[in-house]
Image 1 (cartoon, chains in turn orange, blue):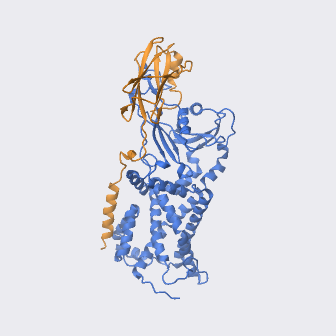
Image 2: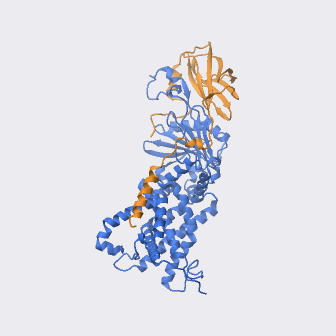
Length: 156
Length: 449
């Protein structure tokens, strides 16, 4: 009798503790989002004043988005001097959207995609180089993308 | 009028008294400390409003710097620090806050978003209310302190259960000595009543505060949170426990960032790729999604990190945790109070009630009353012992072994399983008893063991 308490307790505590751990699929038990994902493809070398094709491959829930609610493209120069108006991309089917771009001058650009489908909105920016960079642009690159620290060397 | 005498097992009475006595003496100081720090912490918002008023208040002007402009300002003013959090003010008169970390130091910079001027700096170490919270939650002693607080809280439940048994009226229908103290029956009776009667009054509230405080604790709380999150009825992962999702972009799709101090010797092609969303864009998303004002933005610190927006508002219903992909700006998870499971909602309410924020002043005053009551009960309990104790002994009630009563054994076993730290401590005491106390005559005598 005297030993029941310590023995019973030990057994239960051991069982209880060994059973703890968060399920890997815990997130599936709660409200889930279906975020859009995009891969932006461009030719490896883009020169000024030449037509170039840019593709965006849109997926959601690992499936091609064949008919997005909207898919717009914006070209911006990093220093803010050039801003082409937003354009609608052509739907090539199979989740592939494309558009043709012509860059008037060399420099560092952003291709910005605005896409939306089934409640998910995305607006990724891809940084690309057209022709050659000026010293000023290289300098600005050293300061990192304009908005924030995305340091990989300063984590704790 | 005399009613039928209730049959009471005298040995059970003594066992329970003995356990109540020891648990009370051992945990009295910690429970007292919890009551004092809790009373102060209830008024955190009001106290900080007074302490940091100069840091908080700004005069609105026509133009306001954007979040990105403010962030840039931080980088200029604090070149060696890394910004980890941004908190836009909850209204136009409120300064914005940046949390910066520099080595092991972490501090908050309060910024006037209209002028771009720093209105104050506050090191985390100097936040007095955080120190109070640390005292309340972990006795300022890290994990060990956390476990001791949890142990005290769980043993307080044992004290309550045994206390209620001892208080329970035995043979009289009279309310005096039960819900009102007996002032005319002499000092001894009065001392007992000043412990038992107020204890009865605060029992419900105290059980509530303990049960709502436990989900915070490192051991029981962590296990409990894991259990309910796994069941689908708790908090969604990352709100309390669990990791945030990752930004989805593959590494090769992300633009390299050459460091300011280094030469641009990375191949230019690696410069091409996705760049992180601007903070402005994140704020726009937060506003669009209608997050409760006063939220904090946790800035991504890793390449695959996310922007996390988090608000633990005064009222549970306004809480939100949102993760946004660093590159695409897609909302990866959006957990509002409404998305918590049933138990998660109850725990969320418990927490805001525990902190005294759910119902404002009424909530604070009720909680304060419970804390003051606890201080009185702890004090009167100790006084009771002090007055009764014999000269050369601890004065613990003599009782047969707990193993003699099946009822009590079952109760203790149940408590030890529900609250494992109670279980562990009982095991530890049992071992101590077997190894030392029962073998040392003087100690045995002193403890009445």
